[in-house]
Length: 68
Image (cartoon, rainbow, N blue to C red; front, side, top):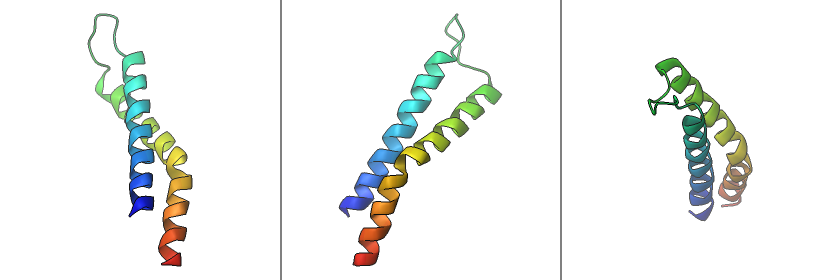
């Protein structure tokens, strides 16, 4: 259970933090949110970077599961 929670916390917080940072960076000067396609790319980039950051936690989860 602890490895699963660690994986989820690592992946989710990284993904959401990266997305929020990118979203604020790409916001229009008048405060409007970015266009749909830009927002889509922000989500793809955030998910990819979040999974890269969460990979060690995923490995720990798999190893702890196999050790049973």
